[in-house]
Length: 177
Image 1: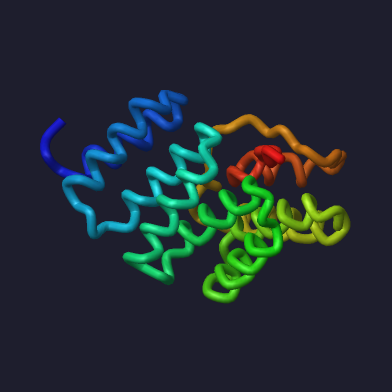
Image 2: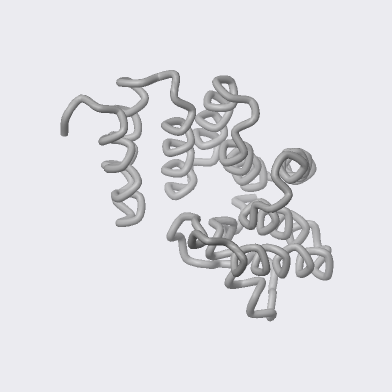
């Protein structure tokens, strides 16, 4: 691939979808090497680490990206997802709350908030957030984004929209204790 960071970023994205974690990580790292000031490349690396279930590495990548752009909503969501996986639910909730304050119409942030509430045992409040995420996704002109990880809910959730939304927005990993 040419020495353009964007090319490596796109390659990492495709490899992530193909669940080729090691290759995706290498491509994301090359994008960062070529353009270390672009926070989107750190976001891609954080996504790769989340797919690999490398929660601390995902958190570190998200935080490096946020050091470049403190208002980057996607990096905030990735940071929250890593925090949740590390068992730091209250902190994850604060991060998602701040992201929603910046962009209240972001469907995946609402899904993340729902997932955090679900982990906290507040199923009814989680369902409200999942439904809002689905409503916003239906109104969106772009398709819902997230990782292609299979939906494995740690807490039972029988509502179709809850399971659909979790999987569509990449919040569907059970925490690792």
